[in-house]
Image (cartoon, rainbow, N blue to C red; front, side, top):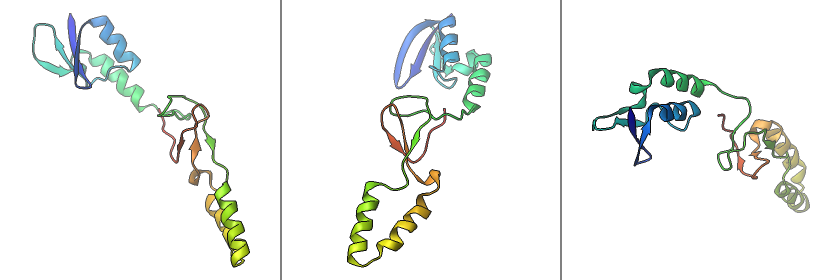
Length: 137
């Protein structure tokens, strides 16, 4: 049995059944992608043709991993955490210290706010992308 697949506003195919199964298992196709059996003309989600693969795919999507995946480069690795004090914090500290002595309040305040690693940006070691939130795959 051959299938046409409609994904990303594009129709492709025909593909044989084993190829579609492999693509579903690999995660390249979603059970919600539309498919049409050759010479049929009726479009339905792939889950109607491959119910076992749809169950497998939904189980895979429910699994969360502790290691984040970068959305820019696709690297799956631990992200570095931005340091507590950035160069701009030191510059502001020196300016406030010289002008009004308020730098003595500014630096401890920044330390309290940024001492929690969740309040600092995460940096992908592969491409240098920065994000406050790490994305689980």
